[in-house]
Length: 105
Image 1 (cartoon, rainbow, N blue to C red):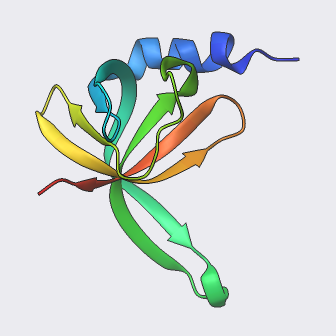
Image 2: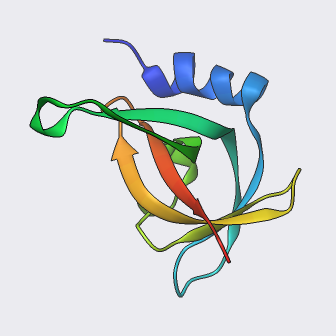
Image 3: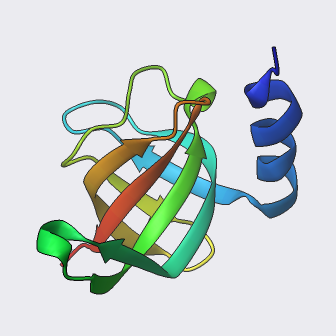
């Protein structure tokens, strides 16, 4: 069995990850590493028609989190100082997740 966290996700975060302050709703913030993409394209095939949307997303390693990220949490990308709200959490089944984001107002 492949240890995705040790052999894939950890090295990816080490090369492509950047510093993020994660703020769970109503809890203390902490630092994680994430792979940020400000223009991730998502395709929804609901109803047989392809609908493409573009949104910011943060790829994360779940082992960096003391509890699962949740919709409504917020985070700040330290490089840009932009703050986002987690719109949706998409687990990948291998110890990682995509956090679909909305820019915080």
